[in-house]
Image (tube, rainbow, N blue to C red):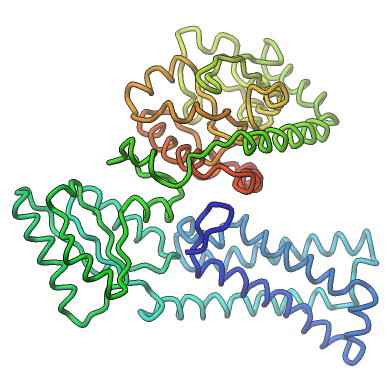
Length: 458
């Protein structure tokens, strides 16, 4: 896997993106050559033709990204890939028609864009079919043996199956055994058999529920010296899912691992970036501010803004501000998490939550220093005290400023139960561990996708 901006991406996904960018750009260049003939290089050079083709290429890749074409775990069937490709080309055709109609100088030449789009869709469909066929061959797959037979082993096997874009295939694992001495013999025999057979194993994932006295160290060292990668289950889970594995997580894992280094200089840089982005978004929001205020006023009787106590940096309590999306006295019976199709939410409020318009006043919290633009979402004091008792390491998320958006928001969504809050913490800890300006910019970019796709809101 390839690490970019402190996030791991499957190598085959990066190759897929680069090849599709080459195919899209090449299709429009070919279309120009077919239409313009010998004048192709002259016209492309004089009228910024190559720049226009580059812009089209980037737009196509971005559309593919926003339609989840590079995240196969969000696609249920192969036909859906081709259907989404057709949607993307249809959208681009409509957008190009509108742009060329308004700005005729944006065109390269007559019929170039039309022919280019036809070549793009034909090439991408053929390429996707070929890529699926090629990547499915055993030679391009990493053979993985999961050493362990408990819950952790079952979890990593399921994760590998879900993330097939990683190119990993589980070729063996161990059955659950209750007796500790028997487990030790089973694991040692499994490693000894791997060392003796000719079938190659590329990676061994250690997924033992209790490694003390059960880990076949000598056999694993022998495999390691033969070129087999030996890796702990938590590291594999972290790369594949973008979250820390909470099961079996110990304080030593946080003390001695890479990351969790919140340097003052880095925090200062992130603070400046958050302030600049928050100020820019507020300026862009000013023209539609009166419209939102009017919609809130018409939705139901009550105030325009809604203030709520939240837990911030180092446990400090502050007031977060939102546009009101619920009826007045929605929590007369006490604090409650929002649920799907919550009856307390107004009709306009439901739209504002899906589009995140209700969160815009929190930009003031960012400017005032209570929040950052990116970080773990601040939780209510009533829930924090309870969650801290139920979930180990929950307090770690308060060691940095809470955020308007965050890694858990773009990768998971809203948490309204203990189990969901625990899952969100796994993503929040990943962010705290790998926090950098590059990761913040990536989260901001993915937040746009989350808003456009209307994911994660209640």
